[in-house]
Image 1 (cartoon, rainbow, N blue to C red):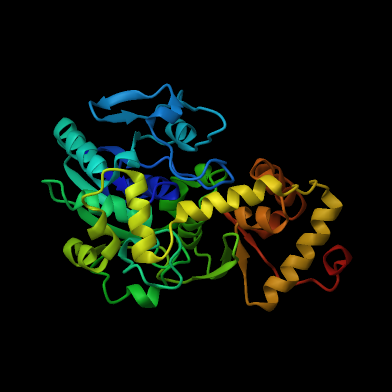
Image 2 (cartoon, helix red, strand yellow):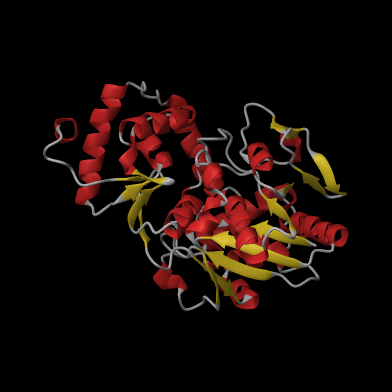
Amino acid sequence: MTRLIVAAGGGGDAVAAAMLHAALYGDADHAVILTYAWDRLLIDPLPGPRGAEDFTGLEPLSPAVPKVPAEARPIPPAGSTLPRLAAELPHTLALIDPNNGAEGITHQLEDLITHLQPTSIDLLDVGGDVLARGDEPTLKSPLADALTLAACAQVNAPVRLLVAGPGLDGELPYEDLRGILGPLIHTFTAQDAERIGPVLEWHPSEATGMLAATARGVRGTCEVRDAGLPVPLTDQSPTVYEVDFDEALGRNELARALMATTTLAEAETLSREICGFSEIDYERNKALRLKEQQPATLDPESIRLQLTQFEAEARSRGVTHTTFRHLTEVLNLDGSQRDELRRMLLNSNPEQYAAPLWSITAADPHDPSRAR
């Protein structure tokens, strides 16, 4: 049997889909994970999502949907985590191409459903911004989720909407989502997290990283993203809820407006009109800033001093954990230095690794290297 899981926002949602599949369906069924190639600028310096034309080595899964095998490669300067995910996850990764708007994604879904005849279809969002109305001041990235919600609403097949880790994307807090969440489907465990543990050693997803960390029992407050958003890590964080699909669509004004779109540019225009912004505009502006910014040298002594200062300031804000992605940005490093930074920190202070997060421990007054 084949299960189809649509990763609503791409990126870490595809990794979480693999953990969800193992937890709910076990190893007997095969999963096809339909996802965007839309990575943060640390991975892909080009703003916005990548389409099929941005890769070499894609293979046809159905007439309208390409498969991303391990051998596929993004065409430089584009970057993508999908080929490596394809190599490390025991599932088929299929590519959402948003260049033809929600109508194009709907056509892809219908084609895939006809071809696969899946036993079930789940639309999975980590964090819950798929439930945004569009006017929330904390909302940062509604477009991808709204497009997949709009497309799934138009297929002639039952789609179950699942939200994992409500509040973990740092956009809509759990308190704002609690009233719309339906039945509890699953609470992830440490055993569930082990399924994707090796992937999260390198994958930069913060929300899915926190989902796995809380499944292992981590609690506190995690500081994420370039803006340093504080995200509570609570007993609700490793949960998965079903949400009534029609209620979600009725709540999400952007998704309803996107249903007839035939281009990504048209979808962006609607996002600007309804939400007041397009996250691709934000990526464009940030990419320009990064081009002008000289990355810091990864000097161990300088990094240690900067890290000590950051940790002291973070503790004063009540922060207990952070992500390596956030540390990379805080220390003014570029994406290519993230893995080296992670290795450096794990070698020097392995006790602070709360996989896959970095624990900001209380300062030890008896340790001169930590007190300076």
